Length: 309
Image 1 (cartoon, rainbow, N blue to C red):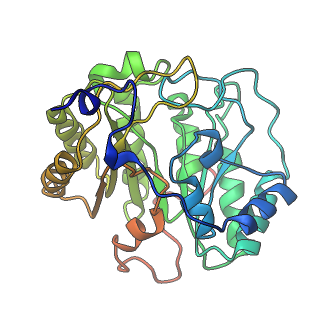
Image 2: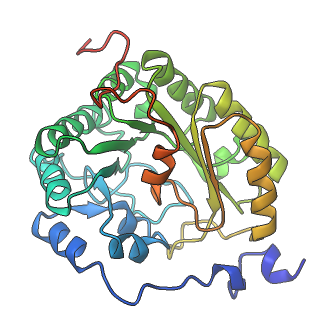
């Protein structure tokens, strides 16, 4: 395999030269600016950002621009966080209304400084979207809330259409890639959500190119399937412009991605998105549509023991 395909330094391989949309995205940028909202697209420097904006899409980032953890794959700055903005859920809902989104992705920075990790803020955002734009499907992509089951319960009982928590990498690399996170805790979180809300679509994402073996990705995906995860995304790690982030260890070829997708699809997921530019929030609506319509009804997922306690 050529050196450019094996190591992350230097020029990107040809298959990672992404075509940039010629125009579009002004509406999304204007709405976000007018409502003082941020997106994970910008904060994480996603390579699909312009593509999404040109199609009128964005993934909303709650709870400020700074994260309390220092994950070494992420370009969002770490540092002292700002107090939660109580009006933010309503502003996100208004952006969803103005953009006429049929599917809204909402995520956040990790807020270990908050007693509930921001779970109530997520729940209020889901509720606000429901009130302002009925019929819009909502996906929440949450941190682990430091393993607090009360926070897990609040987030699950907000009843989004999709509950997403990314495992990100294989267990062997957690100490290197995700200091402060815990592999087993994240699996337990996804298991908890599925047990509490069995009809809710659960989702998780992984990156390749951080030093894992592809066999480890398959083993990790199997562990996700064992806790009932329905939707899986796997994409190439690309180093953000930050000195603290890790270098790319290897660029996985499109052929390897295709082989990996075939293997992962055999594990029983309802949807597997596996390709170099796949990201958890990119084309999230299409992944959800593959989940099926069997639990639609009134459009609300029913949770066991739903309610505030």
